[in-house]
Image (cartoon, rainbow, N blue to C red; front, side, top):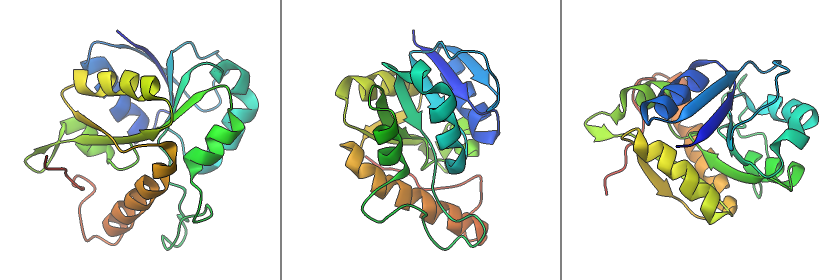
Length: 190
């Protein structure tokens, strides 16, 4: 059983909390400005991309040695026309550089809250794609995801977070343009 702390109580934070609980794991949720210390072995940052720097500043020491999961999609939410990180980087890479003593994993950014909660995308089981440089950290997160009945796919090294963020950006921009529903998304057939 994993002990998971989730910083962020919005739609994604609530949906991920449901996934964690459904799998029989312990979950503790925090508002972004909550000053309680995080105690989970896995800490999921279910916050918008701009909030990451505040979390690193206020909680960086608490995150040392932990699996830190970045779910952000660093996109321009005013125009929905671009990612806001350099094309050769990612929000997850920036976070990893800021937290050198943590095991950063990119995950949950290619799923919508509704598909996490329902466990399905259309007729398919929801799949959580993840990327990271620490195999044990990805395995630990995959166990939490699959315990809830979802699929988990290791997309490779943390450098693959660029592609995951681009996929998340595409999905969000299509939903914002009403070309796919916020209750839908991309599915994986394996």
